Length: 404
Ligand code: PMP
Picture 1: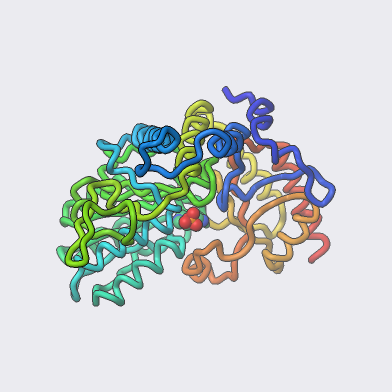
Picture 2: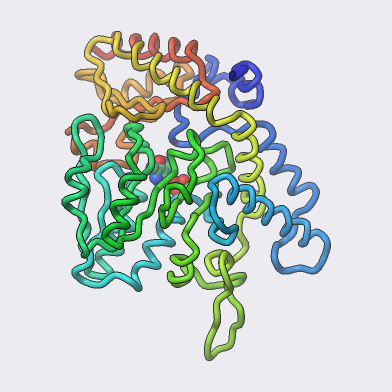
């Protein structure tokens, strides 16, 4: 059972005011807030062990290297990767996806097919389009239905021996749909295709088990799971990571360099060129520890209660439509009010201290599907409360009165 007051006290920003009102932070899908323990860990790193990693024999360099590798191990355990070297530090989901698409540029041929879902964030569309342009492969789209669910019968039909890789998010950022990724992974493998799961929106809510899922790649960002911005992880199966060429060239990723030929370092360093965000990587480990100390069962219980309560309360408002009514859904509500632009509602409720996201949520194809310019998206975290939802509902009602 979550002691919500205690949890909220972990997050200093939650006690600030915005525009003279107590902050109500419902933009967790964009980025989560950070607990004090994470903020302190960043400062502690720079106070006590700041040095470059994997290079120096001196004590600080060894301390920093050890801390960085301990963090990698924590993340390995958290996602249940078989080997620590299957855990690549990145700057975020976008970086992880581009690392994979860059690698597949040397694998795909004209006539090959890439399947992408209709529910993707632009980060998981554009790199695949660029890959297809480069290689002559064809991009095919797994369609969605009115509830915001992917149509598995259509996915089954699209798969063929031409399919080389499938890419899909675990949870949609725009609608909150939880996709049937296990089914999709097994199906893709039946056709010999690889599959990447964009876990950006999943990792704040659940603990992915990459071995149980059996996905080939799983990408996520640290900043959506209480960690620092500029951090992320790409999990890849060892065999795939060995097969893909390096993404960037530079220091750290080499075995030997001569002007005639360079040989590359072993995993994970082959994909970690240059000085990384060392503090960020270490502190991502702290964030993972923090989330586990709260417990994902508690997180899910609290978020489900918030989702159900907010759905019920928002539907009291006349003319309000919720987009994304999938059976499997996380704590995201995308909605509009008839006749009112989402941006106007967002602007008015910001004056009342409420942070929601308005717009296309980097998922324009979903907005086109519903034929709307965007939505108002409230995305809840375990540190949010029903009282905050009441504040938002009253604010939205006020905005409706002003704008109608
Ligand atoms: N995929 C999804 C589903 C997302 O929600 C996001 C972030 N909104 C991204 C990818 C991109 O993540 P980042 O900007 O941290 O690289």
